[in-house]
Length: 449
Image (cartoon, rainbow, N blue to C red; front, side, top):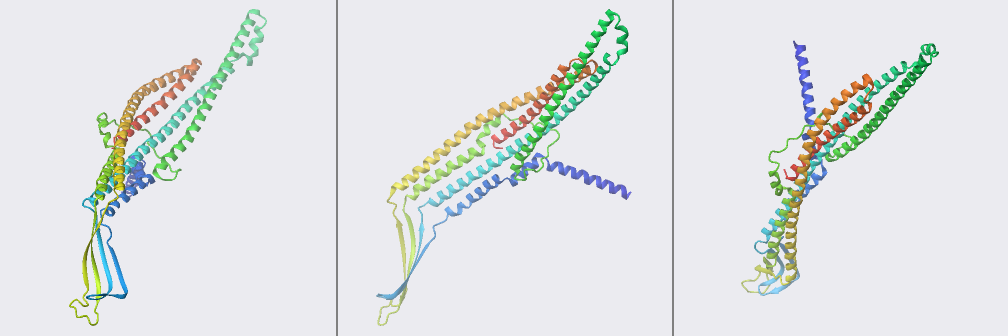
């Protein structure tokens, strides 16, 4: 009983390990890994974090200034001798300047966050598209190998037919020919049969050579696809920031991604795309800057305190003799040079308008890209149905033609043509599935989801 329990535990652990491996090799796992490791996403997030640090900088008052003076020779005053002077001053910008500066910095932080979100969404799309590309190449290799097996089977059939035709040739059987050669009519008939057999030998040999040509071409294509697969995996691994030689696992069959039911209405959500939000946030930041610059043109008020250290003086009978003095102070900056403030305000207004125009331009581009991608999605869906049926019909036709060829040697041209057509349909079906999934991934990216 314990032994059976041990075996059951081992089986359960094996199943769990396979499930875990499958989960790790899924596309969702790669997406999560890319989000954690991709340096481009990390860089954008650091830029956003740096923008957040700007808020306490711009919303704080300027540092107060402190001045200390010491008289090497005390200054004679009515109340004694002044030996030192300490001044402290705090400047206060005009009302609303700090609030506007903080508003500008917060909007710029939002802009940085939307830029980070766009890079992350684009990364997700690139990972999906690259993953589908790896799958397509692997599937094409598998399909090519299956068709190579068909050609090799045809080669064996052609070899059997060639050997059968050669053994049936009269060239190896001289006895009957010599006995009938004395009769003119029979001699001419025997000669015609011999030439016919020789022609069949040539036809079977040509068929065999043509099959070998097709095999060599398909083997070369498989070698090219294997090289392409290495390149596709290197391209995929760069998004995950891992070794170019890291293995990429894909499913045996690529499931068609379900088309969102609200695919048409998604076009209305293009305004939620991070790039649109980024430019809108920049426009808001520049609008806040306009308000800030306008208030910067008003005076800056300073409040301070002057503390004078007084030393007693001999012979001074004043009641203030030796008493330190404290003097409140008020300062005021006069922004009389108005040209620079006018220029700063005009600059902020131009940047605000430019950001608004950029947001509108991005919306227009997204609308066109959305419609083009939707067209490609519909085309891919139609091609999947078409090539699925075409491949099934071509496969049935090929099986019938191979049977006919193996029996009578007929329709060899049709066998090769149909085999090429089947290979083409199978490749196009895989390409259509990949195009459909890629189009859906792009629609998700364009709508900012």
